[in-house]
Image 1 (cartoon, rainbow, N blue to C red):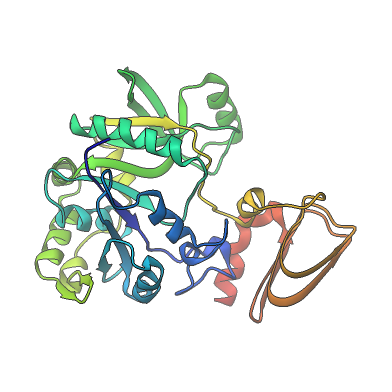
Image 2 (image 1 turned 60 degrees about the horizontal axis):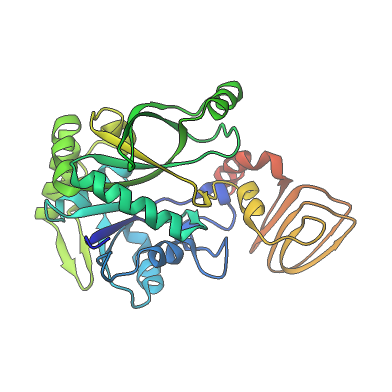
Amino acid sequence: MTVSIQPVVLCGGAGTRLWPESRGIRAKQFLALAGDTSLFSQTLDRTPAGTTFGEALVLCGAAHVEQVRDQIDGRAARLIVEPAPRGTAAAIALAVASADADALLLVMPSDHVIADLAAFHAAIAKAAALAADDRIVTFGITPDHPETGFGYIASGPPLGELGFAVERFIEKPPLADAEAMLAAGGYSWNAGIFLFRAGRMRGAMQQHCPAILAAAEQAVTDGRLEGDAFYADAAAFAAAPTDSIDYAVIEKEERVAVVPVAMGWSDLGSWQAVHALANKDAAGNAPSGDVFLADSHGNLIRANGKKVSVIGMNDVAVIVDGDDILIMPLSRSQDVRAAAKARG
């Protein structure tokens, strides 16, 4: 690739599915959950500024500005601060309103894991070629099991060797449907990663979600620069309806392409997913910190400064964060939000 692509990193959200470690200003994307550096740092490192990629554009809330600044750590990046959460459509509209019409924008969540960087970059090259043909491109993750927690993308006609036209999007399916799609082939998980020309997305937003685009453009016009951070205007941005980019634009737009890719992707959407990617001992345990284990198998233990002893337990998570301790079967990981809501 010789074209310059601007990474757009979406850095909002509190990540309550990984409570108690992830909450407030210590949101999931700022934690080292898969390796020695934070998920946000890993996201920035995937697209280093140079020949292929320009400086990153990072969108975050005001509460996370200092965390973002600290973890950017000298990398080439600009900050746009969202005055209030309005969903991914409004966040992307801010990026579009801040970019040249012909700029290629690569939109990435800041809290995902991608193990195969070469495969990701190869998929970006294909997506860039499709975006140059004025398609909005989404990256589809090649499924390796019948997952019910993700939306799916059905591939339509091939677009040369680059990808496929999108036939339709499927909401999170029941298990039988997920199994059938896996067996049939031609379906991908929707990872929420996109590449498009800024002017192309602006046109699509004018057609499908004009109120969101208008609010974002006014928020940029009336915004202010403070040091290295641009603060979108709060009053203007408040007029933006809350919606995801999928519902607001992608699922309504005709010229959407998908580039399927197997790149060791995970959204780390649960403690069970963290355990699946963690380094484990011979008994399948993934301990972190001062942990004693006896006659225990398949556990995720994150001690975080405490001394944790686990005896005769299988397939559980023990997550310590200050005075908060979460203990649950890993299979109940999707129920964490109840504790997060009760405990804060």
